[in-house]
Length: 283
Image: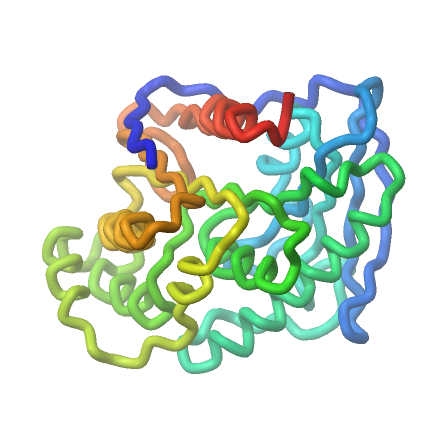
């Protein structure tokens, strides 16, 4: 594990390469998932490739453009899709709910798996360098999607959490979901440790068994998720001899990885690039 604190800011730039874009429909157990497949031109093939995974909002592929641009700049072929029930995707969008979280997340993970299976059939894709990238709720969805797909070699998780859906929701109620009307984070963290309510989906067993490399990126000023509890839980997982997880903490960053003091974007691109090169997912 590397625990690094960063202060510099560097926004994701527009793509450095000419991009070939193809709009597609992907079948996911009877649901049609609308997606766009982006391929940077002029690079040696086969290319590493990623699927971009959504957070909790009813978002389209355009709403995850930051992740798409970042990955294209790193030389990835990218598949970004509309969340189930949103945009060009059929099916029903289901908002976050602790009681139904296991069913909701399994449904969303199945859509991610369908996207992965489509991606690896593309001729320019290197099937030994397949990954998932996303933020917030995607931190639950991506490991679940990779459970039965050994072909997923890595994940980059922005402001995700390894605690249960119930714990995350309870912390959100305590803090006012980052709206400034709740308890201070320190008090919410103390009360979270005493929580004995329903957990809903709990990712811990999956994360303990994970074989894919995972980069978890947190901001010290993120009060939307239980950041301190998330870091502590990951440290426990790593101590139990799963070194596939790596933590990176950005000083002063909020849930959207903006420095709250300066309003500038956090240096996520350089962090992700260095980690991917270290593990030979990009060259």
